Amino acid sequence: MTESDDPQGEQSPSSTPPSPEVGSVGEEAMKLFGALADLARQQGTEVGASLGGLADHAGSLAKEVNDHIATDSAECKYCPVCRVVHAVRETSPDVKTHLLSAATSLLQAAAGMLETLPPPDPAGAQRGPEVQRINLDGGDDELHPDDVW
Image (cartoon, rainbow, N blue to C red):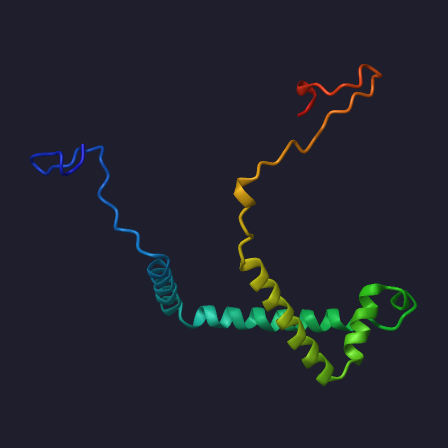
């Protein structure tokens, strides 16, 4: 029984209290970001210090990995990953900037293409069966309606 059906306006013990209305995606995102901001304010400098330590550790790991990739050893002469890393290291900053710009343009074009909808089928054309059973037992060669899956 709902509140409008109950003449006394009382809820039964098994009913749950009404939940707050769910807003639009933007409103719900604002609520989420507000809650996260409150949590960050409550945690204060503890979180910042731990994230700073984590960033330092990640930076040192990245430097260690960089020291062990494309070292011009015998294996690196044939490794495709090492060859690409070596080519990137030898490339001038102007070329890197141009390649980054071209890659960004390519990704934007691909995203634009994927956002477009395909045109509708002309007059709702029906497609036929995509799989046809072929009898390999040497029986009759006629196609029966039951043979099409």
